[in-house]
Image (cartoon, rainbow, N blue to C red; front, top):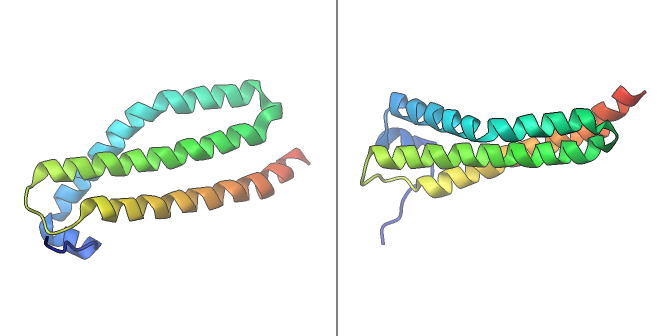
Length: 122
């Protein structure tokens, strides 16, 4: 079994920059089409049930983490359909990237809950 690389540098060797950005915007487009109804529903529920603000912010954080995961999933699928025989382990690379972006969203969401929301209620 061959050892595949897990870096962005090796991904740039397998694909051109235009192919990577094209796959990213395709994944972003389809993930956005998939998640627009979810975000609209959460926003409407947040407006109606304002007294459950913290619960809905947690649900929005979870939805955003899932949104970034789906973007990476569609991005990976698009890149895999472009070429065969690549030297990069795209699945592992994008899983690591989606975990990093998910943790950043979680930290920003918790900061919003514990800092911004109390300031808004004063």
